[in-house]
Length: 56
Image (cartoon, rainbow, N blue to C red; front, side, top):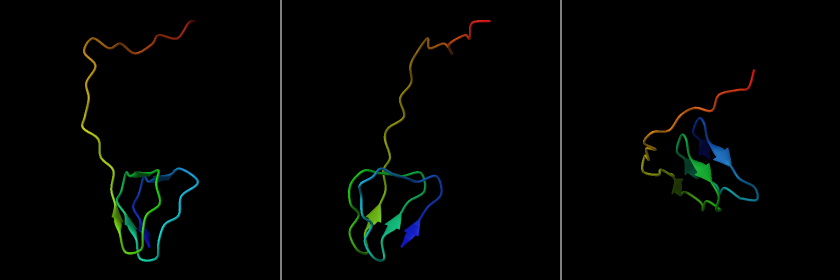
């Protein structure tokens, strides 16, 4: 098994023997033996978004 960097496993999941999980993937379902798990979502953009200001 190989788990790439910045990977999150959301329990309960199992990862099969010989599986590979791509870097940056969030695993929410079981990964089968010798399978490649990769999750990517399209980039979104929020126009006019402003970072919240902390109260002083």
